[in-house]
Image 1: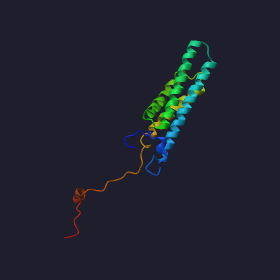
Image 2: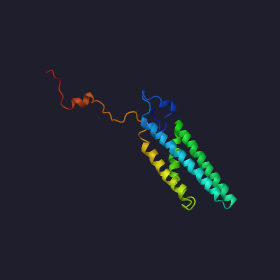
Image 3: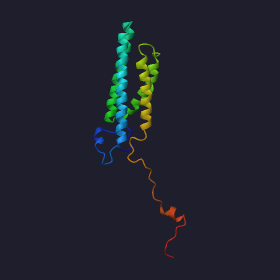
Image 4: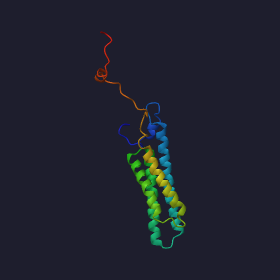
Length: 165
């Protein structure tokens, strides 16, 4: 899989371990990212439920619920795309992770939103860190560096002589 992002591993590729398929760490990293995205979607839905329970005015409540449902739908679609190996899904997951903490802080961590906002901020930071930490490793087939054999001109300059004199 040349020129692929680390999350560009499809389900069909997951069965190809023996033939140079993705390493086990790539599958584990991808599953972890999908689980974090689904947890973020669940937190968005939790926040929607809390908004409806603590509703004072219908117009702002409807706007907040619509935004929360849209965020949950986008996050769930991103999780599905990441699981399927879509190229855009990794970038979207990184943006979701980076935007989660500011979005959670916007409500000011007030009651009754303290627990879901804190969890959203922490999960967003972990999601962004996980994606960045696995970005360089998930597509590598071999992690040991290989040194090429020296060329003839390099050996000639080291003083090696022919054994025939």
